[in-house]
Length: 172
Image 1 (tube, rainbow, N blue to C red):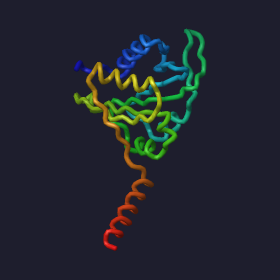
Image 2: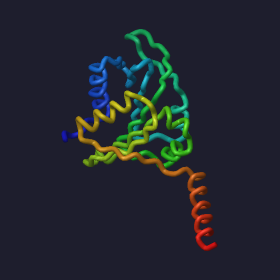
Image 3: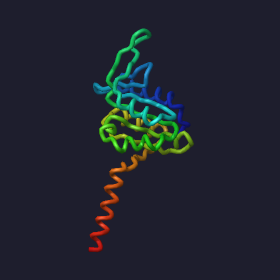
Image 4: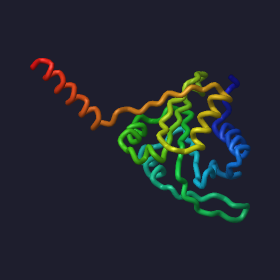
């Protein structure tokens, strides 16, 4: 495995791969257009949970068409790439919001940037671009993925109640 490049260089490499597949990728932004949909990448070392929620819920993004003009596009899917471990509350937001998980993916590359080979991912989207991104990371950098989502507080309560109910029925 070669040393993984900085996130912006990694995305530039991936966008070249997208171009080879016949997908359009923006020269200026980390956005790829494939199968009639826009797929955006957002990379951040740290993000406040409220900021994450606001950005994740806003699907409209400006993209530069040329040196002088922009257009607004509706980004169907957004992937967050974190070179440092994201706050647990961001993962909690994802675990609690099923509709958000259908449009938003998270890639925690913190282990990889520390010399490891594991990327925690949350990707329940149907984005062909994000699945290709995972394939790219695996083939080019031998990165393995672990899917992980903390249980939501409601799920934990449900599991506790079921555990108590099951335990109670075992003694009946």
